[in-house]
Length: 207
Image (cartoon, rainbow, N blue to C red; front, side):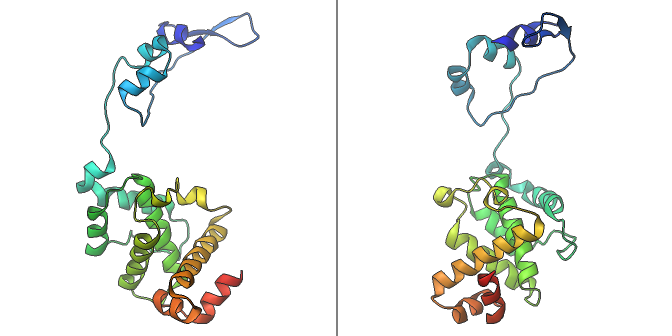
């Protein structure tokens, strides 16, 4: 309610809490929400909603913009890449494209981030594997454990891991190793699935 007067005032006047001197500021407000306009209207103070909804626009979900997936994928890859061992150019082939096109991408950009982090981790964990093998391993892991739905709803891999790049990568490798061992029952079969050395897998699990 305290913002209503400031929002409707052309001079954007306000008074700080505990102060008696009125001040002026200069800003334009842009708001965003995952809720619909109807839901926001019910949730927010009516006067406040009226001031922030003078002009509204609806942005389509990533699912509705699949023709632009590769552009967004390239952007996310370069944004997240901070290890020179990972490919400078965003990895892309028909298999990745088909995978994105076939899934609902309910997490929007978080789903692209999740895939990018897993693929970067796969690059570091299995440098001797071909790109096709690395991509297949990531897709298999996502389909078996995440499936891009609310089955296992992570906000993002940023919230699922902690620390710096090296620590987060180690955590992701550990997660991949544990899931593979759980699925295939032992280190040997898990290593075969992940196409890595059994000793490497054991070392990751013991960290």
